Picture 1: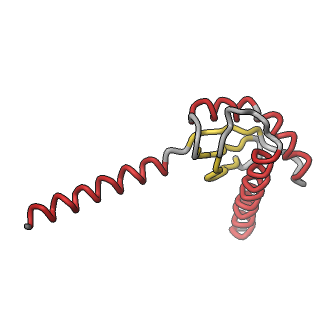
Picture 2 (picture 1 turned 60 degrees about the vertical axis):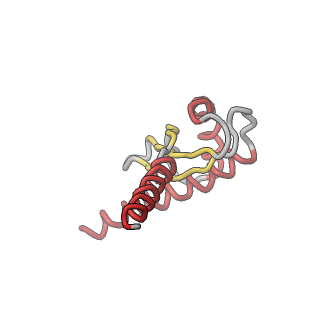
Picture 3 (picture 1 turned 30 degrees about the vertical axis):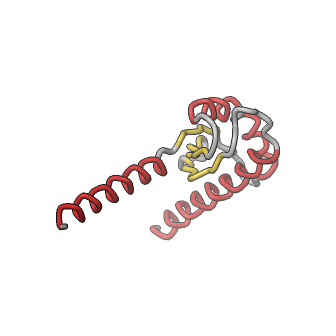
Length: 124
């Protein structure tokens, strides 16, 4: 019985990965909204019943809130594009969320660098 649960989880990861690849291509090639600049999809989390998918993204240029709003407005269009590409019974409803992980990592790196520099000054 545990092998069946493991294969279901594994399939969920595979579906999420495929959704991420297909969405990346759809956003880059077919989405014409000027509010969506250079978007990087960081991760996709799919519910066990494949009804919903949280799509986490970061932006290189542009305003994160405007990009999030534009992507959520285009979610139906993107879901329709996924429906044509994916071969699964249920294509999930897409929910886009701005991922602040890169910002937090940069902030943390800056704090560490400052602490190291302060420590070096104190030792001299």
